[in-house]
Length: 229
Ligand code: CA
Image 1: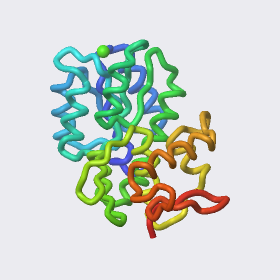
Image 2 (image 1 turned 90 degrees about the vertical axis):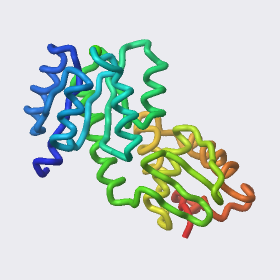
Image 3 (image 1 turned 135 degrees about the vertical axis):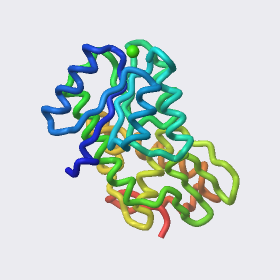
């Protein structure tokens, strides 16, 4: 990993927790920076772009969600893992809708946090190779803003529908295996091919002219799916 690829910004006002995350990051070969507030995080972000941000939502000067939406509004795709309090379902959903890549619920084990970090960094590398706006037929997929339009009209997708479409879009024209879609969108633990069939059906209802005769989201018999091409 290059120095820039190892840089992680930890935004957490609980000093004990922040220090334990920072110490573990160092031990794993990352180069952490730390902030205890949104203001200090903004200063760090101006000085150097991290490869990943670990963002607590309850911060003394502003909500972590404010920083998240600022970054995404300017098209900054730095992977962000949000730290949420147990039971705060609303903030978690809001964070994901605003473009957080993942979340960890407190209290969490460091092994879990590191698994999320590795997964978010892997995913970011795949996405970086892709154009931020992908066009397939009359479909336009804006990866940064998580918007989809068909012939200029907005298509409303759920988070999972978008994630699935994005996985196919970054490899548009190529068949993508069932297993690879399942693990990218649902995670290896929860993978069930029936989810995939249901979500492909929902996507076809929303993006195809004739969902029964798809021309955009195609089945690759016995292997997976392909978007366009
Ligand atoms: Ca806090």
